[in-house]
Image 1: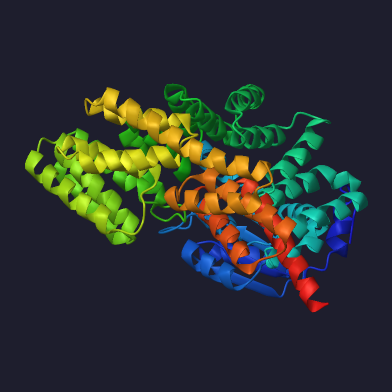
Image 2: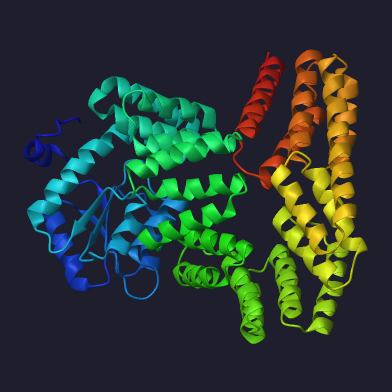
Length: 554
């Protein structure tokens, strides 16, 4: 059913409210009863209630609600912002779900934090029944344009949902902008960033919307165009100083460019304006720690821990970062307490490894050399016994500790492999050189980095040359061996998968080779999720599989 935007009273009368499912979230029984009676006056029959954030999440996991009315303050546990944050993070809401934040909270920090999550309305108490019903009606009429997307969304077929947006744009020109924004977000969810960029640029051809410019800038940054992204995001902020996503992306652009002081300034400004973001406070803490700005880092990590206590975005990073700060302040007891706490709350082998690294660094910075040396020895044993290779940031910290405790062979081998597996990442190669320099091995470190990255590049380039000269089977064999030697080199893995696909396109489908390509692509996605090339090559692989099934069926 479609109504014109100005015809609010007609919309109230024509909407069939009785069969919708409602969720009321408020810690006070009186407010829940008031909202319940307002909905009952519309004929609503299916109304669930939650008195806490945890209870609300439990209900949201069981039912796809049409309308959610949620208070910001919910007593102990999650607040309304964190309920909406988790609901969106876990895809618990349909495209058509109308979310109204109902609160007396006028504090700018709370309003800004909630606004970043894009609820459909923010209603300040006291609200009249007519105000609620009029606002709900306007939201609901627009939401119905997305109704056709729900089945595809439930099947997690975000690409099909994005295509359905085009059909709705043709029928609802007045809401084209709303539908284009939804389409771009759906394309990003399924990794089709270049198609999302085309949508954003279509919007920008009509008007310079902040969200569309930020979308293009973030995609360009993913493609290695950090300087252009930085310029675009600065323009967004100059035109709209309250568009917080642009600050976060601008900080990332500065970090890609090696401009960590500038990144810290951007994050500090953003955290002052809207401080209730777990991810922003964590980023500010990490950049400030890297720069040695310990007071700012400590404040950010402590704020991150407080915000994260009831957040789905809670992570180990703030615990580990704050432990490092405590070590620098010679507060060894609090540092070790934080490390014990993080291991109780996060039980993975990776966290145990990171905790041991942080423990060693804390002890070393506190002057407890013998205990630090013991941690370094235990860390070396963990590294040799473990099946998982540490990610770059963890490997760098590990090497710093091992060098600091007088162990040389293990960190040299670790950094050599890190350079081989990231030969085309100049920023990371620079950080590896810095680790060697701090260990008074600058000249030797330069030689190791240069030789390791050159060796990796030569191995990859030989496989690519075989491919481009038509020697496909030889290219596959060569890249198979190269991928074994460089199992975390993303560029090698991408080229390996592409060469295998090219070989099957020419010589016919092979199940074993298809498995090889899939394994290589999944390894890349585990290292850095969501890259456009991953989705493009995975689509090509799936197309080959479909063709083979059709051939076999015929």
